Image (cartoon, rainbow, N blue to C red; front, side, top):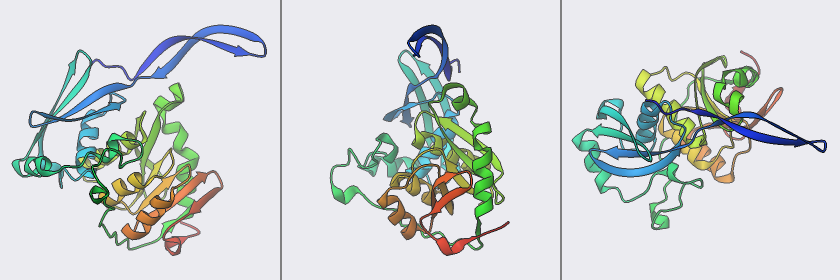
Length: 267
């Protein structure tokens, strides 16, 4: 695929009463259509990389598939005004998709806009049973190393990251995107395809909204760490789903909002 994820543009910087023209690197944003068995389902604005991971992740977190095996193959085509991701679903998964009337959570910033009624809004029924303890030092280890893994953001300053960390907070995988939901879906799709070990946690470079917690809960991930604040519904959903939720994760400080008793002080 020839679509670039970054672009060089001219800029003029005004500083201390002086203007200077130079070049800047910005992140690319492209319309991406998800097409299931020949039917276009939704168009989203996405950083045009790791699109197979994105297709798997959003299909899974939106309950279109229950397992990676329900996607038979994926074809990515560049068209005149964007990209089509053509997903060949199993007949069972496609039948469920056709019967579903709701829009994707990731389609909007607030997560429920576009649904026809409040009856269509549901919180996850998942109840994660995590045997073990979360480690505060592991969270701090992940925070201290996160920025060096954010290659695209280090160039552009405009994309979010979602990283998978092991129990000690070592960053194993990271995915980046202009949308925080997209970055998380890309990461979950990668984990789904790799059939990753469930012992670990996700850290995101954004706030923790209810839909972010929902996606983590669907993926049976026991801990979500966010560098910014959670919303009230994110905390409520985390409590109900058994997800440990951490916000304001910064060097030497983070705030635990759910499952506080499951944390210990050291490795």
